[in-house]
Amino acid sequence: MQNILFQIFSVMISCLIAAGLYLKVDVINKGGPVMVPIILCSIFALAIIMERLISLYRSKINSAKFMDDITIALKRNRISEALEICEETQGPVAQILKAGISRHDRSRQEIREAIEDAGLHEVPKLEKNLSALATIAHVSPLLGLLGTVTGMVHTFQIIQQKAQAMVPVDPSVLARGIWEALITTVAGLIVAIPSFVAYNFLVSKVQNLIVEMEILATDLLNILTQKR
Image (cartoon, rainbow, N blue to C red; front, side, top):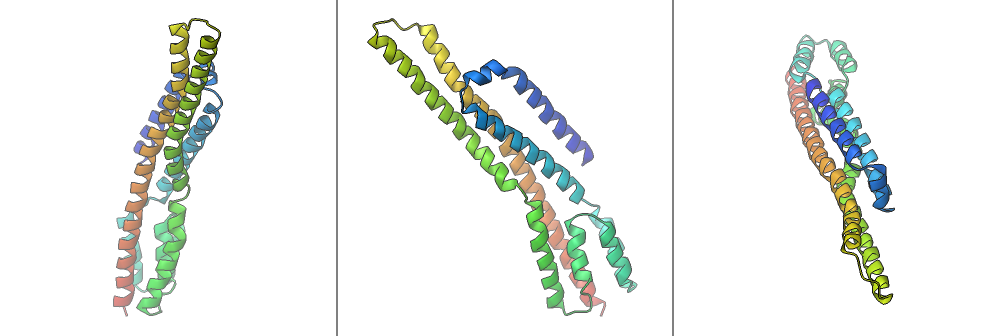
């Protein structure tokens, strides 16, 4: 997992450097005021992606070993030891199992409810800021399109002014106006595509972790009720 995170981080940094070299300051300025929110979106997206990757990395544990240790402690009726294992282990899995173990002497339904309540508290932590990342992925190309449309409007205004003044329109001027208008679309896509890919990657990781939590919670519930 650590190697995967390092590779993702390296690729992202390389992409940012390449984009920074390509979209120089003067090019960004030519994109107009719409470039400002697009750049802000890129900064927020990068911050969210890195924060979520770090958070998910910290939430990942060796579930098999963790559950084996919990099972051994519970079968020996060492409740305090099982709780201590949960406290020493970081992540949502340990927290929901701790909630169930702390009510080991209650009915199966009460234990299940305690686990579900803990899950309702932990799952939003896993999904934190993912909706914001999805919004950035959807809004960025729209901002780029807005910049392109406003840029084209400005270009045609120039053409109209020259036509009214009986001044011939230089094709190079028209071409320059068009490519300057398209800069915002390119910038919006540069932000949107990695954001969308990262969003789907993070959502899949969260879903896998939630499924893992549900499986381990069911195993714990069976262990606690069978040992009576």
